[in-house]
Image (tube, rainbow, N blue to C red; front, side, top):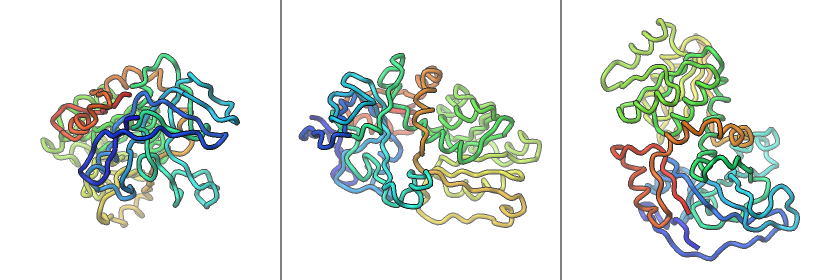
Length: 338
């Protein structure tokens, strides 16, 4: 079978490898139909992912069709179209015992710590599969995992109706967070230097857009908020300076949710944190968000179809990555099909 393989940083290729086999009664063999390219896949390609091991078949966003089931599997059957949850905790540590398997010290993420979804067949535990509405195409269904990231981030922020939200960055995750925040009743501001991506933000519910290269970000935010600051900031751009500035843009009881892993420690003004009783809430992966997200996808088809800008067959995986990495390509979410 074909698989998208990174043997070492900077080297990506489509290889032939042996098909996996079911080894436990609780496992399922899934024929993969579509897999999305995530920013973390690009970091693995560049060698800048903090946790990835090599060599690795990459990919953690995707869906497929059940090809075979183990003897103990009852929740799915051959022919079912399913979305794959790609993370597994140890089940025994403090985080796992408290329902936070997403930050388990021994977490296994497909495509990072174990071979991932960008291969023609994958064996997974049956409890990691979610049947999806047949109105969705496989390309649309493949966006479920990044939508769970948006759901987790909004849960961490406690985004609620009436909140004024600022999102730094209009990449796929920024747009998904915008979609989900707006659906929760928040008013959303999106800040982004790429004009093409900034234009997309309106389609995902942004009430205001700011290009910080053309206008002062802080002045614009204070103008929109009437000088009060925003209630929530999501930092998805990966620019360390914006983490520090975000604290200054929050009003009392504001919440900051960083979604990027800065390579160096970021200075934060704790005087403002204490004065305004701000909350900095980390977010990683998701926990328990797949069911709600999968059920919501049919109602998001219009936005999903704008989110996915490019689709490539697996044979053109290298070209797909080139497009995803090129900020001038017009790409938002790039999906590989099998």
